Length: 279
Image 1 (cartoon, rainbow, N blue to C red):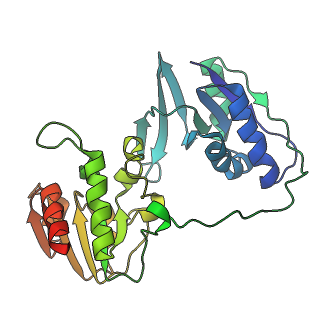
Image 2 (cartoon, rainbow, N blue to C red):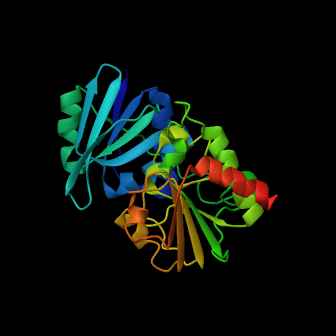
């Protein structure tokens, strides 16, 4: 596993720093790229990571390597919980707490390299080659004017009764319902943060997230599927008047007085039947 660390000095604009970081990430050929979380780096690194085809996480306070596994720690919920996680995606850009960057690099035996500043030439104009709406096939899945909000949770990605996951079937069921009902799509944070589901659920992004750190929807009705309905998520539903949920767990959060109607059933089977009726 190759690990590289980069810093950027001097003065530069967003349009200069993004191609500079992207070129450095690609040219390094590294699996893991470390950078300090300065305001300048945090501004440009997300766009540079996308351009270089890399995953990115910020606010890391510790990075450890054990063979091929890289583990990152960062604080969550206003520094009440220290989370530990790993990603399979490579290259992976890890932006550290700026005060801990030198210590993390030293612990991993990496020497930071300066990123050459990109020339301002050809970066002074923005060219728009087209506009694509968020969603599958250019059709937006976010519809604020729709009377119905359909929220998908992480349960769609779990192993089903046959012991296997059915991500493609889940994606087809969800998009089929959206197309037939005209509903707006919402998602739980756990689902949009799940890298293994990103390919099948390409119609979904963090823009679809509701509750917690996501949007607060204002639809007349809401239908949640495969989502536990815990308090941080339900708070985002406070302007939804008619709340219904489908979950196999009769003791999930929706059952604790947070849903007007809870269907204790398999969402795969329920939504399949709903799609058939809508057809």
